[in-house]
Length: 361
Ligand SMILES: *[C@@H]1O[C@H](CO)[C@@H](O)[C@H](O)[C@H]1NC(C)=O
Ligand SMILES: *[C@@H]1O[C@H](CO)[C@@H](O)[C@H](O)[C@H]1NC(C)=O
Ligand SMILES: CC(=O)N[C@H]1CO[C@H](CO)[C@@H](O)[C@@H]1O
Image (cartoon, rainbow, N blue to C red):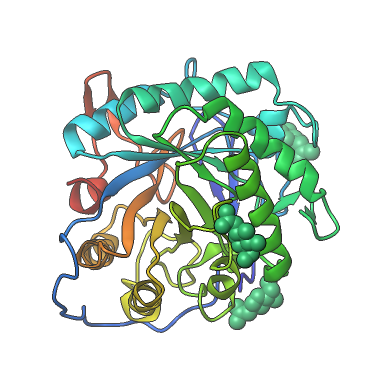
């Protein structure tokens, strides 16, 4: 449960703000549990978020479009960052957050706005060029301007229409993954699962029949609450049109600071005992997989210790965890608490200490 909103000043020149509301403290495990590797010993996907087209998005599903600062020319060099992450760090997945308002030009239920889409697609294409998986992430907390999709806010049809257009655009590229929604919270999870089912039907119906679709749960899609708050039980019922669940992947987030907010530079937990271990058991029992699409911490010794332990656990359980995506690079800068944006330019970029210690491979 999120209890308050914290404001983080981001890229120095951009006067940008990102709000992230923290959850309550969960218990802090002290030891990393020893267990036999269940699979290959390495997750399939490792990467980072390239943020910027989501700047101005708030947890109430509004977006102040003056704050959008995409990591594309004339902004930060997102293409160069991804090329660096692939070449120097052996990464192979990038999540590309974008606000619903930005991509539709503020026209709820309307067509994608062509000039904004062209800018965002520039980032998508430079991701695809690296050969990596590229997640299209709609960063709206299951809402538009304060109201929940299919629960008093936008209609399911308006949301389905958005995804129909995105899926039509990217249906022929098998490296695209569809991140249905960033961090739903305070939703009726059963109604939300019905909404997500309609989106899955629309994406598959548009011709994107094989790509990954990420299924986001309640409580800011918290890995620690996926089971206890009913997200898993509701979302496990979602199927493809052929009744299979192939490439329907559970989307989870988890931070390592004292309130799971991802707003502090110090970390206090590796999330294994309270989140990733029980979730792994459930996934294995149900023959399903999850992808951790947001995790991270400050460039500090405590975060290196705990994040490396968290990632080691995912690697040891790579039969059920497909991978991890750090938060965040792109348009963030050194004043941001969770900065993972490399410094330098062109083909000479250097990683932050946390990327170097834990996220690269
Ligand atoms: C949007 O952001 C700009 C720049 O930070 C600010 O001046 C403006 O007041 C904001 N608008 C709203 C409606 O919050
Ligand atoms: C999927 O399951 C439903 C309900 O059990 C059934 O009516 C339908 O025919 C099935 N579709 C396919 C393609 O198997
Ligand atoms: C324990 C817990 O996280 N409960 C939450 C489950 O989801 C509902 C609906 O969003 C919340 O209101 C609860 O706080």
